[in-house]
Amino acid sequence: MKLVLGLFYVTILLLSVSSEDYYRDGNDKLYAIGSYGQRIYSDSKIEDAAKYKFKKLLPVLKFAWDLFINVDKKNFVMAPLSPQILLSALVKETHGNTQKEITNVVGFEDSKELEQLINNMVQEATSRELKIGNGFFVDFKDKVKKSFWDPEKSKNSQIDVINTNFDNAENVKKTYQNWIDKKTKGLIKNFDIDVDADTKMLLASTLYFKGTWQFAFNSTQVTDFHLPGGEIIKVDTMNIRKKYHTGKFDTIQATWAAVPYSSTEAMLIIVPDKDKTLNDLKQQMKGTDLTELISVISGQQTKNYLNITLPKFKLNTRISLKDPLQKMGIKNIFSSSSELYIFDSNQKSNIDQAIQQSVLEVDEIGTIGASATAFSVTPLMVQLLPIDSDLIVDRPFIAIIIDRKYGVPYFMAQITDPREN
Image (cartoon, rainbow, N blue to C red; front, side, top):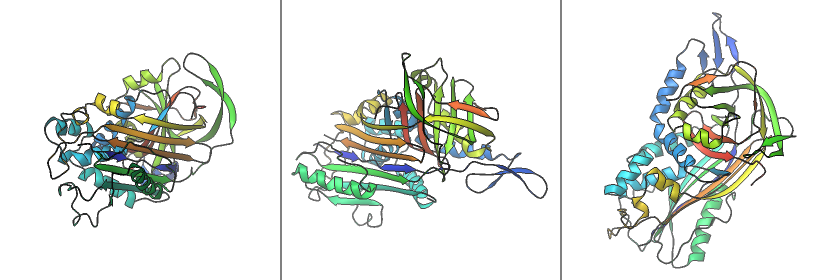
């Protein structure tokens, strides 16, 4: 039996988060206004609470980083949340090695914890527009196990169930593209996945995020950018001077900065030292290291004025996730040995394809990102930089769009050449 799981990402226009400044209360105690309106006193332990919170979310960060470093492309952008959503939804319908591999990599024994996290993110959305959608495309003549989808119990769920006749491939594509258009406001165009009469199901997940930078960058300038191999090119860059979280790592030769948006999101920029490459950085850094970094930008005061010079860039990439997921340890579900049971017939199914298409654009006003993925079936220490520092991004770098409150990465990009799209 051939089963197709489709995961369709979203278009995203990102927001900004205001920087923190210092104030004094009636007792002359120093404090800062945190990202969520709370007072953060200079002697508080709020960073410790942040570390504890993000350790609980370590499976999300670890999965995202591991998937990112296993993508073999020079320039690319990806959105790791949707593959994790769909894989976690499949865990309870798998057995044996198939279930063990997915659980070990995804980090959740079922989708409940991840679903609750996503619901909280959507419900608490302020100063931004955030929508996450899930859709099951299935032919109602096929009997899906009630443990996977019960029509009565699903009436109030956030899952759209769409009756789909897979005998007509063109109509199937129109059906899922129309659904994607509604969920992403038409920002994902012409997403293509192979379907035919053997296809039994498509599973889709979308994320839509829209906003603008709170502090717009200054107008574009033309500066040098150093490509791997020594070539120097001219690129359009933008700059700004604000108080940002920024620092270096104790054990990794790189500098990082968190450029905030007007809500709880921020863009993490990580630049290897001049004598290091992106591959050096990806080999040194672990998924667990992101926990420490995010806890710093979520829990500590912003002390540093930072002059940032950042290239404008636009990426449009299509990635097969099958190979990266197999490298991470999810192998069985892609083979004839798969123990995935979704239908009452108890016939096994396996995943044939895992495809993601993503777009990310960054300029002076804000960030726009879009991604579509399809599954087709037959502890680091951080050192803050001194006050008044410079970060000139004139060589290949990594950019991560992340929710600072929940520690969830929306987009992860590797920019080797800002001119390519």
